[in-house]
Length: 150
Image 1 (spheres, rainbow, N blue to C red):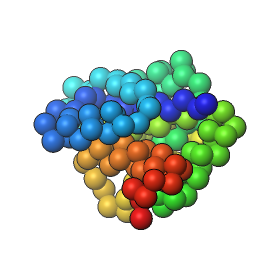
Image 2: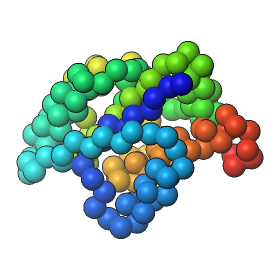
Image 3: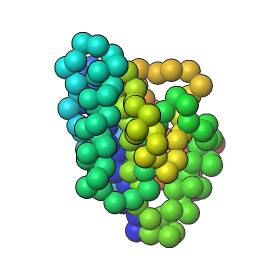
């Protein structure tokens, strides 16, 4: 059995994002680990500080590291679910990394075993978390063949 971890920057601040995440976290088996969002005002310093926190936390985790980044590979829901199914069949764990409002450093991208993106459009990081959790749920439903994904 594979273990899925979502390593993300910050906690959900807006009620709609918090509620959306709670909905999907109740439907999927995923360990959510949040590192604190930086209080730096400068976007570059904020990204660097958050990225350093993510890398430090990754040192303690085991599994394939998939970083969600706008520069990553676009995957359909079917391809994403197939990749997760294959990892599960091999008993591999996966750690998904989701950055904060100003993205991730090159060091985090370099640490990735795979870079993926959720959209060709840039999305707010809170929305990314909701969309990503929905895609994890959808993946499980595709694997089970429930008809949720048509």
